[in-house]
Image (tube, rainbow, N blue to C red; front, top):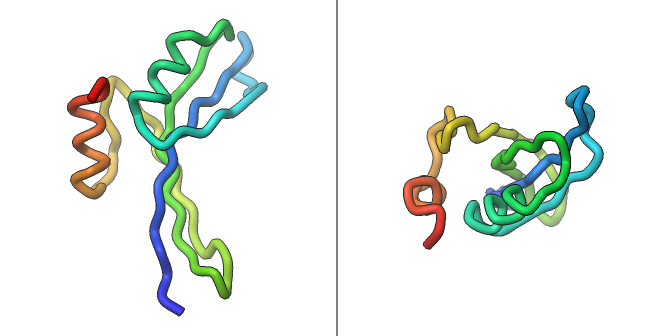
Length: 89
């Protein structure tokens, strides 16, 4: 069976020591940014998670990219890049 690729935005909420206490998942970058802005934790980070797999074999590969200054250090599809350039749309 052919592998499928999917993406998910993740906000990790951290304490003063950088330990992650919670993670929440979103379909869009805008949703992740809104959640991050409302967070009361000491710090947080937004990441893009890329999943590759299929229904028969399950998850084959997972990659995580941290958003730094509104940018990702990866080659990504246009629909993801569009979310970064227009996060509130």
